[in-house]
Length: 336
Image 1 (spheres, rainbow, N blue to C red):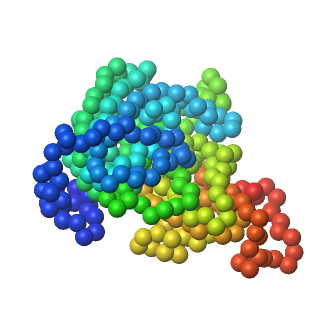
Image 2 (image 1 turned 90 degrees about the vertical axis):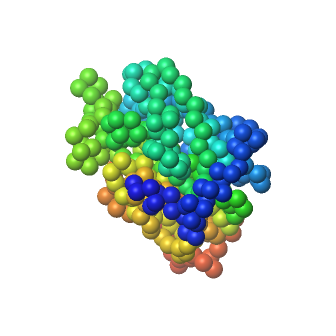
Image 3 (image 1 turned 90 degrees about the horizontal axis):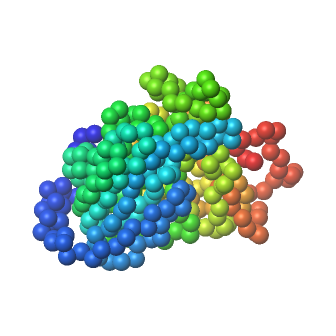
């Protein structure tokens, strides 16, 4: 991606931002250990008003996990989870990453942080062969929600196998309050059944080249957000930190309810390209099940669906009502 595009922020001059930050002595920063969370959990909001040297420990591993209720897959992971852990930082922080490669298959890995200003988003500074540990530090110059991923060759294979995650860089003034915050990433799984065990899937490079995924999923596997839906209370402001790992498909994300974002408002469906991320907010005054889907809707049948369950005693019939009882269609995947 073009450097100026990747690190452009509305109203910020790149050279001025770099010059002003370079004058600060990074060694004087207090040290803080990052709180890392597994999707859909999010670390608590940052309340401090000063930058820190934020220490993040990352590992690469190989782990067999469920890809659906009926199948398993050997994922390549950051910190034993797919997606990788959510990292929460603040503009001006120094992100100190200690990366250890524990891949039992003997492959080299690195981390490309889209939030990092510099060559490869830090990939050359973090590259580690099996058994190696690398430590690197990066000044976080710009706010936003950013994807990170392994960028070792072949890059699409590393991403497709599960090596991706999100980092939030809060602005200096912090984030507006939200009642609930969630971490969701969409991705595709290119796989075919093993000859030895049809319930065990193997990576299918040809399917990746043809952009024909077996599954399109939220948070690493089919059913991640239907078996364990997101939960909120009626009247909550819900914030979703949404990333698209790809590696190929553009999701057209759809959230039932009133969407509100900056700068867009009242948006129900939005496109988030591969390697991109978006912060999406919903007001949910009416209790019930809200569907999260990719509105390229055939992907629903490849597993791309989740639920936000909203509970509350007030049915809010002033907003949502019907003369007859509500009925879901038989086998409904959207409103169960």
